[in-house]
Each structure stands twice: as structure tokens, then as C-alpha cells.
Image (spheres, rainbow, N blue to C red):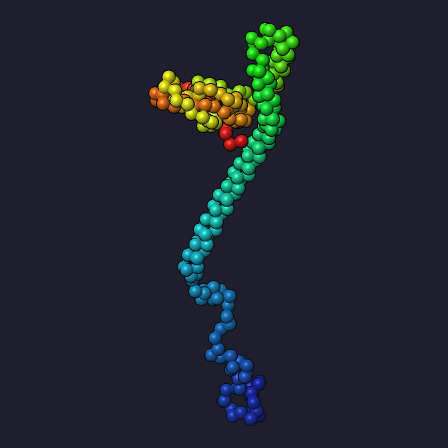
Length: 233
């Protein structure tokens, strides 16, 4: 009896190596399986250009944030200025709301003044009725002046003052060498201001041919009544 190794092919000659498993033989010489740590080890290093792009993007966004902050501050400042302008317009409207009415009343004051000039003091002394009438007109004129002053209206002192184009309307020039040139020597119609705004310019007669007016000393208070008066109204 011949002894055979277990698993040996009975047709295989004695002494020959047993047949190997086909699966085992197919795996011989193959590469080992791919591990995750091998992927990390084999990955290329991060590109330096990517870091530069990221830094540039951060700088771009930072600059954009600064621009937006500046625009926000400018918008807030503009809104604040707009509010101040609106408040000033409201205050001016309330302050000068009676300008047109007061300007119309100036015509009444002019007529009352003309009525008083038509009744000179000599004529009043000779006629008691005319005297009483002139007294009533004078009281009415004074009351009207008080009302106008309560609304901020005041008369411009023009006689013997230097001509000021902001306050005066020259209707005539007269040769007069006794006073400096461009001096108001006659007032045909009084001028008025309301608060710091011109209400009506004065109609005046101005001198010419006289000596040149001396300049005001530096630092002295201006003599012109129109200093600081708003003439844009």
C-alpha cells in the first residue's frame, strides 16, 4: 500500500509538490492594499500661490470694509446736516413769517408821515382842529411803529451816513463839497430791516465832489448800519 499525503492528487507522481490554490497563486506578487495613511503621505504639499491669493482676498475685503465705513460716516454726517438745515428753515419761516405783512404796513407808516408833514407846526398853532387832527395822526404813527418794532422791524438810520449799496437805493447825486463823497444828504424814503434781514432799502440822495471819506481804523466797529444784514431776502 502506498501512502499519500492528504490533499495530494492521486494522479500526481510521488514526490511532486501538491497543487497550490489558484487564489493563493494569483495573489502572489500583487501590491499590498492601499491604506488611508498612505494617501496623506503621498499628497503634494499645499500650493504657496493659494496662500498668496487668500492674503490678497483678505486685503481686498479689508479695504472694502474701510470704504463702507467711510460711506456710512458720510451718510450720517449728511443726514445730520440735512436735519440742521431743515431746523433752520423752520426757524426762519417762523421768524420771518410776518415779513410780507410788515412790508405792506410800511406804506401806511409812510402815508402817516406825509400827513404830518402836510400840517407843519405853524399851521397847527393857528388852527385848533388841525392841531388835534395832527396829534391823532402822530399817535397812530407812533402806535404803528411800536407794533412793527415788536415784530423785529426797525428803521435804518441813513442821513449823513456813508452810502451802503446793501441798504440804500441812490436815486440822485448832488454836488456837495462840504461833506465826504458818497454821503447820504437826503432821505426820500426810510429803509427798514426785520431782525437781521433787509425789509426795504432806503431811497436816498448822495453827495459827490467832496473829499474822499477816510477809511475806518483797523479793529474799530463798523459805522454802517448794514453790517451783518442779510440782503438776500
